[in-house]
Length: 196
Image (cartoon, rainbow, N blue to C red; front, side, top):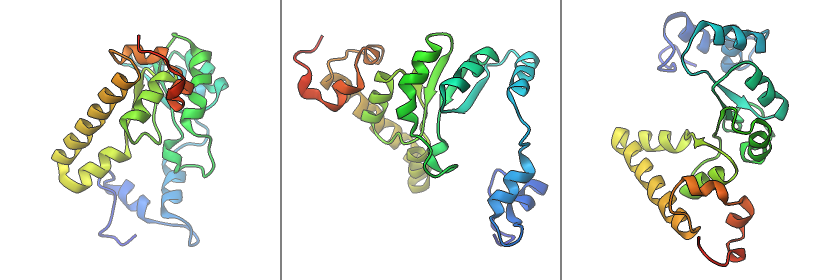
């Protein structure tokens, strides 16, 4: 990238590193190689857990085995995430792995999900599939890009309105009741006979 173009959250040496590429390759790949230690392991998460009482959340869980290791490492929550599909082309979708991971960890830790959430219906499906909470990325950034803070507020208001409508249509009086739904019921609403 040109010297005057840099990511706002990188300053100093980090900003310079994010602009440099090796052998005509990606500057982002170069930056990632320089900034992240490939030797990072679950032992480091266990060490971090011992250093703080703050909530510890690990993002990027896509396998049952990693969810088990996260619980053993003492984390408070995990985020089932493929990082919006931008890290590895062809990675399994977060929503596909969410029910299996929820079943694996039970109620031992909170399970959050992100990647591909674009509507209130997506939020409802995630809650029905076992998520305790849903994280948003791109919709927020789109609102921010269009109208700043007002755009973010508008996106959140729209998602809330969609979720409230979807909850009512699914026969749920609250977000907590969404957990009793199944993703099959949401994809095949004609199978429902009455609201409870």
